[in-house]
Length: 76
Figure 1 (cartoon, helix red, strand yellow):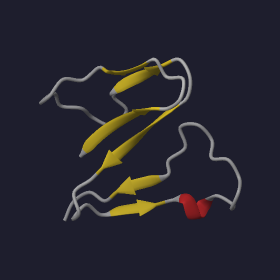
Figure 2 (cartoon, rainbow, N blue to C red):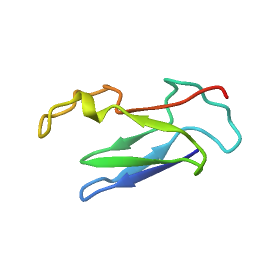
Figure 3 (cartoon, rainbow, N blue to C red):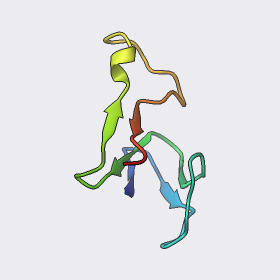
């Protein structure tokens, strides 16, 4: 998996707080944005099985902060 922080418009800093090779687990902080709007992309290998949960949200309705939008299948 690759995490790519994207600073938009008025972002002054995208701070990554993990180091190369450092193990992370669900819920660990990967970094932070300072000042203004920003986003991020998670990039997975092609064989990764991802199930999106956006069908659970009505069209045009905001998704709550920290609400899951997808899940990666575990196991074989």
